[in-house]
Image 1 (cartoon, rainbow, N blue to C red):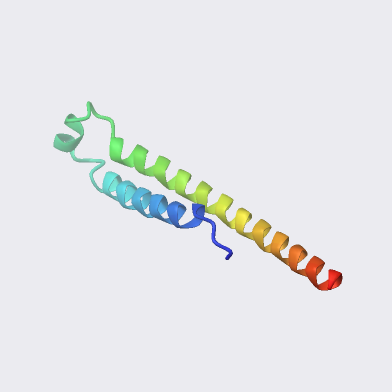
Image 2 (cartoon, helix red, strand yellow):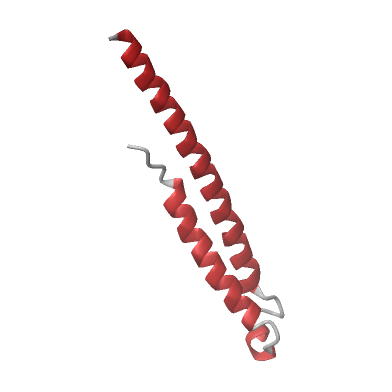
Length: 83
């Protein structure tokens, strides 16, 4: 079974980061909202961090999935020649 858990977890972090970033972008000019965080748009920055982390996980997941497929093909080829 070619399944790497990093891919769906990466999608989850990417989606969460995208939603949080869009929310942070939409309230960037709202002084009353930014007053609670001392003028720092925490939602935007943490959303971008989650987005980057999610994309990194998806990249590693795709790379791991390709490696599993390569290993499986080599293992299958080795079994066919040994028989």
